[in-house]
Length: 224
Image (cartoon, rainbow, N blue to C red):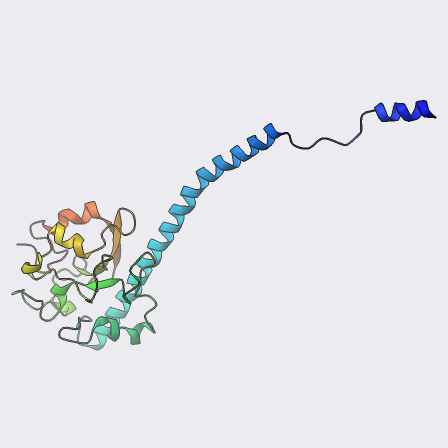
């Protein structure tokens, strides 16, 4: 009996194995770290694209509401608070609130809205001697003219941009990018046009349009 017991003790166990060795654990941890390093940038880019898409959809809804407002008001675009009620207030009735007024990437929590309108499209743009482009029917190229864009993080206290007033720098590239968050979503930002379509445009695409002879991106009547 003792001999049989000794033989069983020496026999290898069937179906049993030892735990992971330290080397094996380190290899597994290294592989997990590599996979995480590969996946995290993709996840981050996916989140950034989703937020940019949400912002673009916000502007799309604002554009549709603006068109509805114009239909009810003899083609007048929603205006600034200088001469009329601000678009921020007038569009609430068409949107059912202000939930679409903020870009999810906007870090400035002191303001209620992340967007502002092109002051060339107001009834009395400060410092401008151009004709009145406040009605859609007065804008020569609605699909080419910017109506609304994203505000820079430190641009506060105004529901419109100051492009028309040369004393404020006009809309030269430095003056434009000081007001518009032209790189909020990576290389570009979202823009709402007078015809209500929305585009994501890179800063490298916007910059030359600002001073292109005859260009209508900001100035409806065309750059001088």
